[in-house]
Image 1: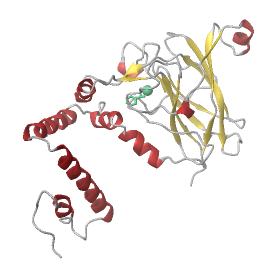
Image 2 (image 1 turned 90 degrees about the vertical axis):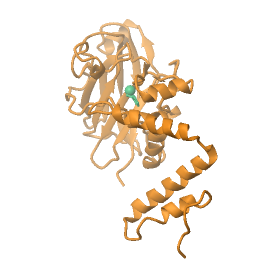
Image 3 (image 1 turned 30 degrees about the vertical axis):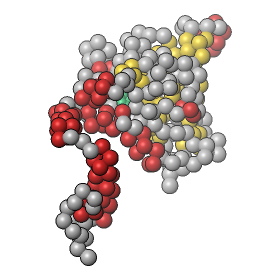
Image 4 (image 1 turned 180 degrees about the horizontal axis):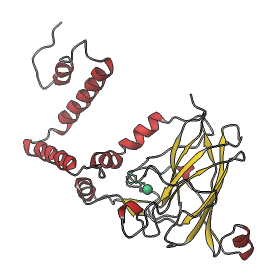
Length: 290
Ligand code: BEZ
Ligand code: FE
């Protein structure tokens, strides 16, 4: 039976039926589901023409804000929790494997590969931190040859790419490769909470909703090893003031790490540090490739 003309009550079915049966099946499915939920939202909200135009203007500003470096649509997806939901449905890990979280916009490909134990802080600013642990499989065996890409904001909450000319290039970034014991270690500085870029339409939206733009202090990791699913994740400071209200919903209970203040001279010497430091010990467990 042919669908009827457009009406308020069967609008979604009429629009969905317009897709050709010859169109790609996944494209038709995406179209049908998006139309169904968009039409349901309009029916529930009953926006005025002025409100609808404001929504169009908001999306237009979001597009205009984008360039090679700034991706305001991804930021919008982040603050709406959509990035984390896409991450969740694509990263259902087997029991025991470490959980993933958002990548974020501040990853830089091509960070230098450094010797194990190296200091990723190139400007010597901030409170020293030592991070160490092992990369394991779900049976607890160490993974040889895992590639660990780490990056973090500095003690003032800025990434190097946000402060070109102030921080050295590749400050607080590094790539490490495990040996047969699966162990890794690097030095950095205690990270600080920071606001996501809030000078555009996404920032205006957060403001209008009475939401703050802050992410709690964290370290980023991408861990890759042959035969395993790659893991994009963070570890978080559980004592951070924003730990319960991350602007992008990236916090998970399993990603909390202890940042232990260490001033015992013997421990400082044993860890080859020069001054009191925060010690973070964190293993990661990779799921086997499917
Ligand atoms: C980040 O952690 O680098 C980040 C994640 C999502 C949005 C903005 C920043
Ligand atoms: Fe970050």
